[in-house]
Length: 304
Image 1 (tube, rainbow, N blue to C red):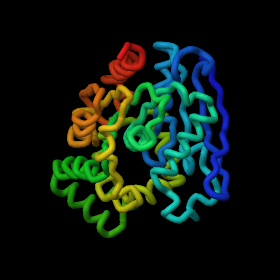
Image 2 (cartoon, rainbow, N blue to C red):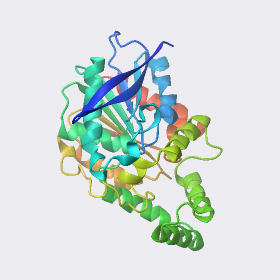
Image 3 (spheres, helix red, strand yellow):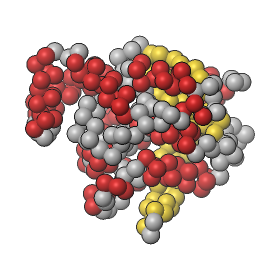
Image 4 (cartoon, helix red, strand yellow):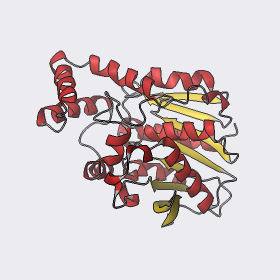
């Protein structure tokens, strides 16, 4: 499996940053490449690397990258940036810059997970890239209000003492306490990914823990309490303009419950919805991984 890594300059105002990327496969082939948008915001790309199997299955080049501020696209001074720097348009501009640098603007697919699905939906519904051939949204939402509604429902379903502990620590700003972390660990086990976590997921979340600025600034203390720059974000009134064939996926126990996914299904003109039996990361769990990868591969290769 051929792999190429590199960095592309990304200019924001008077400053220039660098976006790290990895290409699995050959961009000179006839197949439209798949660009993978990781979640967070501020969780590095490694946990998404099982998607490289798409290349093995159907010879589609797969492009991974770290969004600026995290992982291999981290830069000194991240923590000094004002909150106004961290907007969804910043990351849409970065994606457009990468697409142009790699020369794939005439034909490519996007797969976004969680926040990456929101980014992909915003890009497709606001910029309308002519070369976007397929869009895959896995565990995403068309607005942060719906995301909060979804995670709030799951929080209410936890045992009362655990729910009260999580809510108390978030209110008091003590989310670094062991008691809070234990409660969140139980929530993640139930709704994000079963333990023990795969090494690639540990790597991605360790990157966020080392450099939490992007997540904390754009989201806040947790996914139950959105206080960051994404709090009012929504593309609900634009998703009907997405013209690319779109695949939606979520899990029965996913953080992204059906309340998040159904508006996409109702409003995007050319759309399919596949649901899996487990949590937020079907590409990491044995029960779902093979089926998820096959569903995505079929969607990307079958005539629409």
